[in-house]
Amino acid sequence: MIALGCDHGGYELKQEVIAYLKKNGLEYKDFGCFSTEAVDYPDYAKLVAHAVAGGECEKGILICGTGIGISIAANKVKGIRAALCSDCFSAEATRLHNDANILAMGARVIGPGLAVKIVDTFLNTPFSGDERHARRIRKIEED
Ligand code: RB5
Image (cartoon, rainbow, N blue to C red; front, side, top):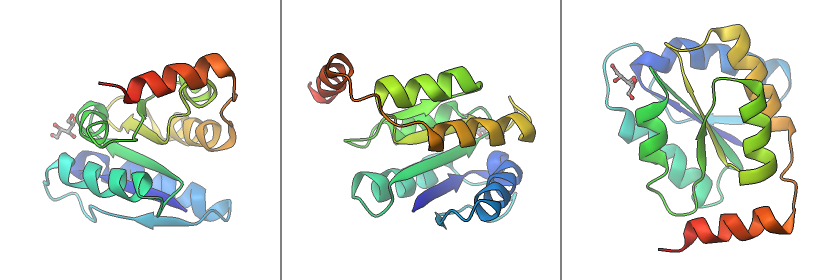
């Protein structure tokens, strides 16, 4: 199950992501928002981050105008590793190296074609499992 969230700036791009998920038979839970009416991105970041951190959803996708605010907010939740990606190389690397559990994107930064390829890369790349990466991820959780 993939958790989806956005603010008003990310609403239209989230619809493109939903179309991709439906086409590929992937289950998702949409935590909003549900229109282009202005909302506050931390509210949706936290809903998705808690769904992923709590195990209800395996991964999450968050979209705002830049992807910055919504990723900062998601990363406040313990256990969340939200990666803001604007290219496929980063989406692949953050799964391989960081075991990122949330993908963040900026709808005012990238177009829908690239965004869908980034989503596809993120969802289909496993964590490498390498000890050096696992060790670094454990250190992220330390104060
Ligand atoms: C909303 O206008 C915008 O600030 C938001 O979508 C995002 O870019 C924040 O980081």
